[in-house]
Length: 209
Image (cartoon, rainbow, N blue to C red; front, side, top):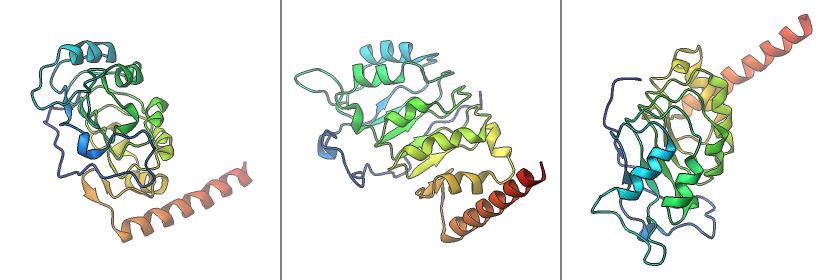
């Protein structure tokens, strides 16, 4: 696992999604982020167990269900290796799972981007830096998140891939920041050009086979 660092909100505001679902938690009702960072958690069952007894004074809870009223979750700096059980965690602990807009899984031991994240359609901010993600093609799974605007992937093996930034931006053109760096018009143009060149190269290779 990469060297541990505290992860920040970095000034992110939990804006309304572009086309909000009718069952989203209103921002005015959302409490502070659920902070389960630096807990040495190995899997999402341990996350659930920890959350049930977690003492954090600035959290809000539903008076009816007792579940948390929040749309941001910090799980950074643990030892999570996978995504199995994440949706169970959301439904058992969070009052409105569809309202989750900000998820920090940085500095864990995650090796893949699992399709389970695509069920969280209103994710706007996703931190995955400092993990062990090896396949850059996994990024394509995030293309089904219509409101994803801020993503981090640096500190993973995929960062060493040639054309890493261009590939990610070609797959996720809606990003406003990648790896805490703002996406410029030039970035988008470069990504489009890079993608077009790679498509041509792929066609030539197929014709020669």
